[in-house]
Amino acid sequence: MAVFFKKLGLVFTDGKLLRRLGFVFLALLAFRVLASIPIPGVDAVQLEQFFSSNQLFGFLNIFSGGGLSALSIVMLGVGPYITASIILQVLTIVFPALKSMYQEEGEIGRKKFNQYGRLLTVPLAFIQGFSFLFLLESQGVVTSLSVFDFAMNLIVIVSGSLLLMWIGELITEFGIGNGISLIIFAGIISSLPSVVAQLVLSFDPSQIPLYVSFAVAALLVIYGVVLMTEAERPVPVTYANRSRGGSSQNSVATYLPLRLNQAGVIPIIFALSILLFPGLILNFIAQANIAVVSGVAQTLLTIHGGAIIYGIFYFLLVFAFTFFYTAVTFDPNQMANNLQKGGAFVPGVRPGGQTSEYLGRIITRITFVGAIFLGSVAVLPLIMQSLTGITTLAIGGTALLIAVSVILDLVRKIDAQISLREY
Image (cartoon, rainbow, N blue to C red; front, side, top):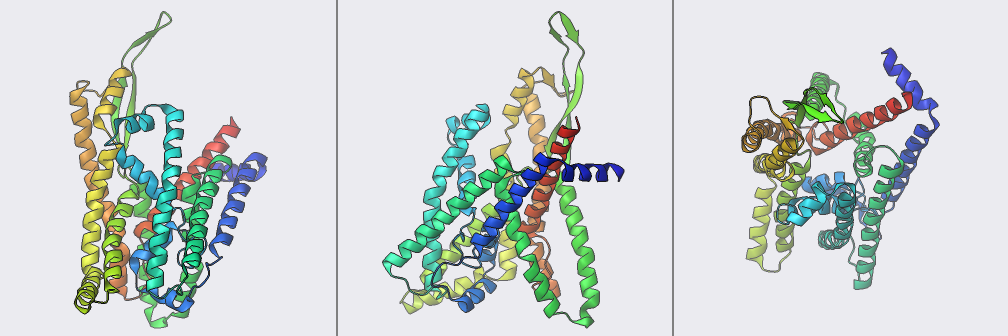
């Protein structure tokens, strides 16, 4: 405890660290101001009804930092940039040159890779912005726009998305932590006051045991998410004896940390993107003038929006995409080759092919556990809402995973800055 207070005191006495934290605060404040400026022609009543009946757009609202629920000028948020980054990482499987740039060319290669991500963000932002505006206009959320007004709104929201991407990168460079993640985190936190207010207004004294049970369950879920997020499977590694400058160095024993949740929240993003696509298509078809086609589309929308079917498909997609994304980002062959080149080996396992197979078996087993964990956390809000019957009593999902990951990363970054100044 004494160490904690000592480090906390260093945070408030170190000028450089305070400036970094202050920059993060001001940048996030600017983001929240932008998120409160709506685009023209929004029907507030229709907007509230639309979001209350559409869970998928509630998810997209997380990645817009809360800007989508208000149809602000930054309604797309950092979603297009995240999508572009995911697409490029998946393309590393298809294009070896892209994989080499990302994994083997060091800092210069990663900068070039990130630049490609920024360029890809622009067309994706236009596609997403056009789709949202067209859908919201068809639902009556946005009043009918002329071609010029539609184009101006589209340019404004695309510019807002690119502006947020720039603010996020400024936070990463001049602040502390990952700027894009902090923007999403700020959007999640900004929704808490309204949730608490809604819970207070609907407070029922007869439901006190339910509220207490929910509070206990929430603490247990948060503890479990932190535990699983930080969990690692250490693989013992030994560096052989080496000679340098006429002197020999004894073998060094260390370990290779393999994270239980290698994929982070990416599988949830993939799964919800797949679930969102049929809903968007069916919404368009439901507006058709042909009665039979429109009726079939409405029926399929009802089935698609059913809590049980939605939850089952959601869990299965998250489970499958966890294995897929782990396979994209973790290559046992490359890891085995890097260990062999560095003069390291896993005790009891021959270098090369056998090491690759050994690492592959381990990553498959821990990914299975991680996939079950991600799928369970993703559908947990649906389960709790169905059990309690109260929409405000829900814990889990993408928002919780992002919040926990961002807080843990921020604490590590601040601790690293403090430790650097102590030395």
